[in-house]
Length: 115
Image 1: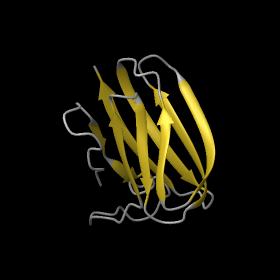
Image 2: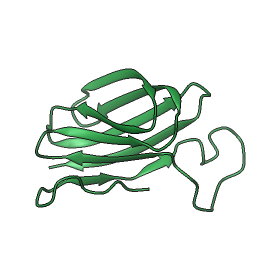
Image 3: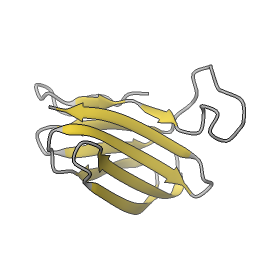
Image 4: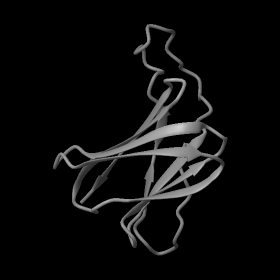
């Protein structure tokens, strides 16, 4: 699932969010059909923020953002109700991973690159 760009004219980056448990990690079946993902995200270049839209009330969610190229890491625990949340990042070049871990243990992840 992709988020819509929030500012016309800016080089925003859509972040594909996938169910991180869907590829055999739990020993269960591999989901080959499109799955409902209750999270949308986009990197907004003008403010160096990741804008996350929670589509459902997901309760307590651990949000982790890591620059895999530099090793920088930030983690937040939020009460994820439907709506938009902003997460500021450095904006440094690199490959980033954002992960959302729900209290049920279900995990969603997304990756994007900044040049």
